[in-house]
Structures are given as C-alpha cells and as structure tokens.
Length: 484
Image 1 (cartoon, helix red, strand yellow):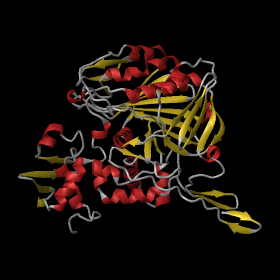
Image 2 (cartoon, one colour; image 1 turned 30 degrees about the horizontal axis):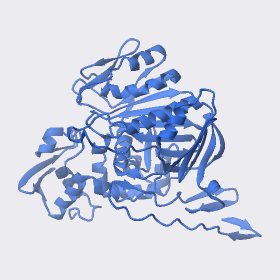
Image 3 (tube, one colour; image 1 turned 180 degrees about the vertical axis):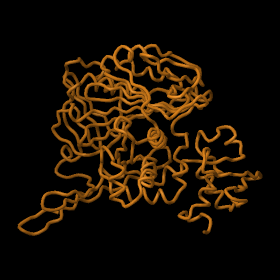
Image 4 (cartoon, helix red, strand yellow; image 1 turned 120 degrees about the vertical axis):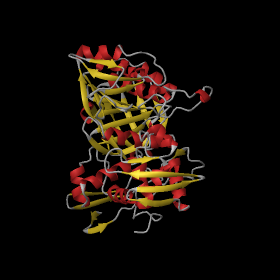
C-alpha cells in the first residue's frame, strides 16, 4: 500500500499466466516470474504481487546487476559448475550409448550475495558456488531465482578471461547476461529437470545431518587433493582419515573419518586450488562398522565458497537415496511445511528457533517441515553457516511425491487395504502374492522389513514401500490412514 494525496492506494500487478501443462514428469517449468511478498516499511506495509512485466523488461525482469570483485575466482568456479553438470561420473552398463542433455545452474540472488547450484548428469555430485555480497560491486539487487543454460560460448568466454579483466553479471527471471572486456553472452532460462528436484531434496536433507570433521589449509590442502586417484572402481569407497598434519585415504572406516566414495570426483576442485584458503570436510558420524555415507567438501576462496557434496557410491545418485520418503509420507510435516512456506521470503539464513517462535511450533516440527520444503526445491542447507536457506522455486508441489515410485506403491498398498496390525509395533503387508512383516522400533534401526529391498540395503537407501505403507496407515493426518 502506498499513500497518494492522503488516500491509500493499492498498486496491483497482474499475475503472469501459467505456463502450459507439462507433457511429462521429466521437467518442470516456472509458473510465475517471482514470488509475491508483504514487507514492512516506514509508516506501513508494502504488498508486491507476482508480475509478468512492469516499467520495462530490462528493469523488472532482472533481479541482479553488478561487477564481481574477484573475477578469476568466479569465472573458474562457474566453469567448474558447468563441468560438473556435463559430467557422468558413473555410466550404467546399459546406457553407454545414451546421450543426455546437460542441466545447468540454478541461480539465486539474496541480500547476502549470489548462489549458483548444479548437479552432475549422474546426479551423484552436487556443486554450489556462494559469492558473498561483500565481494560484489552491486548496481541493483533484489531477491530472485532462475535456472539458466550454460552453452559453449559462455564457457569459452569464461575460460578466455584474463585475471585482471572485469566481469559483469546481470541475472533475471528469463536470462543471465555475462559481460567481459572481450564478450557479451546471454543465456536463457531452461526447464528444470525433475530428477534435479529430487536431488535437491536428498542433498539438503543429508547435509543437514553432517558435521565438520576436518579442516585443511596451506600446502596440506593442495597435496591432499592432487594426490587423489584419477580413476577408481565403480564401488570404490575410501575414507579420509586425519593424520598429524593432513588427511590420508584409508580403505576402512574409523571414528571421525569422512567417506570419500569415488575419490576422483573430488579432484574437480583442482583448478580452484590456486585460490583456496581452506578445505573443510563434512560428514555424518562414523565408526569402525559404518556403511558408505555421503560427504560434503567446502573450498573457501576470497569472497566465495565452493561446496561439493558426494553420494555414498559413484553408482548412486542423490535423487534415488530416499532420505525424504518418510517425511513425504507423513501428513503432519506436509501441513506444517505449507504453513512455514508462507512465513519465508528469500531468507539467506533461516533461524530455526526464530521461525519456530513465529509459527508457534516446536523446533523439531519446524526441522521436519523444512526438510519437506527441501523436497520441492524451496529450501536448501548451507554447511558453512550450519543453517537452511530459502530458495523459493514456484513449482507444482505434487510433482515430487508422484516421482517416488516407492511412495506411489505404498499408497497403492493402502488403497488395497494391504496393511494389517499383528501385535505391538508389528504389521503384515500383503504385496501381490507375498506377505511381508514390518517391525517398528524406537531405537536404531527405526524399522525392519522381511522384503528383499530391506535385506539388500538395510535401510541405507530409505524405507521400502512396505514400511512407507505402515507409516501412512498409522498417520492420523493422512486421508487414507488407519481409523484412530
């Protein structure tokens, strides 16, 4: 609301028309150019509704414009993200001849700076570049997010840059413009691969369960990365273990070790080592009997950080880990997530305690709801600040649950009344001609099932469809759950 001649005046921007219905579930497109917002200003509040235009395309469709203070760092980091997006670190035997289109970075602008995110073609490596606002000479900045293409002309321009050459970025809802002394490149928005959305969800949830295990600086940093093998067997899993001055790779886990499956995947950091000031290794808690685990590595550079998250095995993509399935199957966390989404507006760091206070919810419920928001690309997790960040991509919320086959199969089991209580915490699930038993527990592991899936993975890749069916059956907030 703005004051005009002493009278209140609402400035209403019409919403952009929705894009055509998606032909398949293989990609998802943005429905609006930006998120609506209500912000407090001196003397009142300002309501900004999603718009398809305004004063001019050049002004309203771009949410960032400015120069980069460390152009060589950003140029080489963007090349690394593009390289990750084009790389298959693991090629299935039945897909040797397949030609897959490389996906490209999701770009977010917040008051704390710029964030670029991408996944490898095999979805086993997640890469993110965070450029601090203090390392940007900003002419215009507002909050926004888009997904843009990175074609050979842009990669060539970045690779040809001189260290002292200025780099100007202009980022908007429909395009990214990059200008150097030698070139001006425009890359347009592209559809966001649906498999990336699943990867976003799994990666953020897994990273939220990691802790800082090791810090490398100086010569030890470069020696460790450059000594990594250039190739390894498909199921090669090593463990980064602390020595007196550095890290060494061990063939078996130990307390405090960080899993490094397919260690050559971390070598993609090598072109950035000349800028590096520290390398931090993050991972879940480990012991002598740990199974392969995900890990994350954060390379600190002047004005920027490059995060690499690695799946537990080269042959395993983040999009298939199943870490979010239990949350997606629960009605309570989804309802909380819908409510929390209305309270967020591009926060670069989400204060869970503050959000819980505003929402009048316990922190444990807020944490579960944030993971549900991550499952649709709305929320990410930053290891360096140990906090969630808001990345509101306006996508159809129903897409992700429909793309989890185990969750869809579990709902079909519920529809067929396949779950029968047997005793305390024991349930029978009739699946086709087979009958399986599910046991729930308060201690780890939280569940067990007699099906082949659980026997093979022992819960390391999320719950099986039978366990999910039991969770739905017991959930009073699910319309198809058991009567309470």
